[in-house]
Length: 111
Length: 110
Image 1 (tube, rainbow over the protein chains, first blue to last red):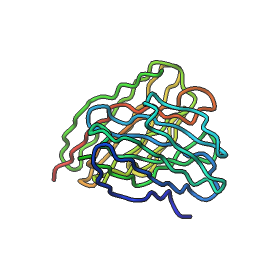
Image 2: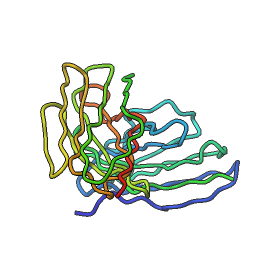
Image 3: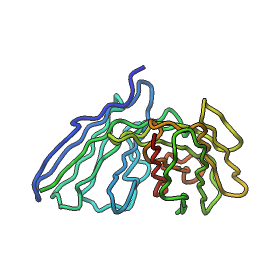
Image 4: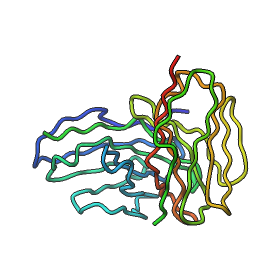
């Protein structure tokens, strides 16, 4: 069974731009969650989607948004990028409220 | 929300040594996972352990939910065990949200 995949793996953007990251969950998993990892704040929960509905959202500004498609693939978008948005963005999928499995992450650098 | 404390923050071991990593959490939890983050950033699942003890090769984990802590044991450490170990309980019943501790950075030297 293929694992969680994330694209792109690396991304460089400049301040003010926007970015879209993609996540494909493990086949059959309907829940997709997103996390941000920075050296200063560690790993923080962004949001979680299930059956195309956002069920839970972390404490992030409205510039961070996401969506989920009918095939459970998910995208997250960050608008008006700031230097502090430089981070590793990790996606996780889960079949039920049990074990979550993470993708390799997208490393975003904002210049 | 749940507060998660991991100790020690840093650990240096000689190859072959044993170690215990601890995770304390502030509220009752239904589920908890342990991860190993490799040098490329990917989180590798080690254990999904809401309670009790599980073993997988040289690794084992114990969660005592009533006392709000979990332990990860690494025996006969190898250089490939180096990396950061995270404990992450779930926030609330039926929740898919993981709350991560700051991790324990393990360095195993030959």
